[in-house]
Length: 104
Image 1 (cartoon, rainbow, N blue to C red):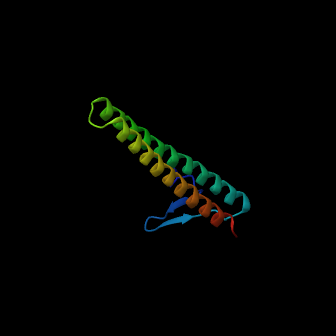
Image 2: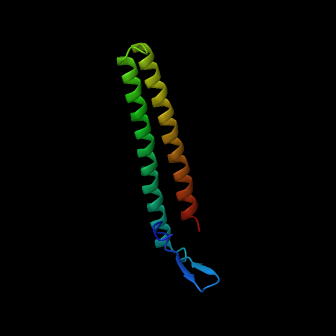
Image 3: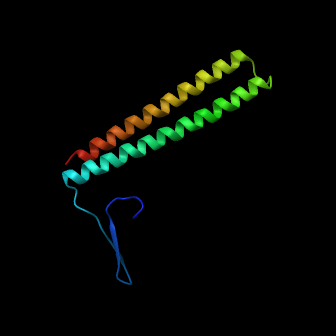
């Protein structure tokens, strides 16, 4: 919980763990929205890294004559479309969540 940087502070009384959460002030809402934006960038980087790995495998397959150059171009286009779709989904979800957090 501490690593997530949510401002939560756990208290253990021996039998029960109480978790106190900070009140949702305007400043706290902005901080959470900022954290969400950072997380979205991390997700996008992960998607792009997966795209890069697939593209590398496709190029190796083309060099090894396992697929033709036309197939390579078609597969690269498919991978790019899929990547763009996931990036758009991330943007959509993050924007919705930011609006949700900023709404009182």
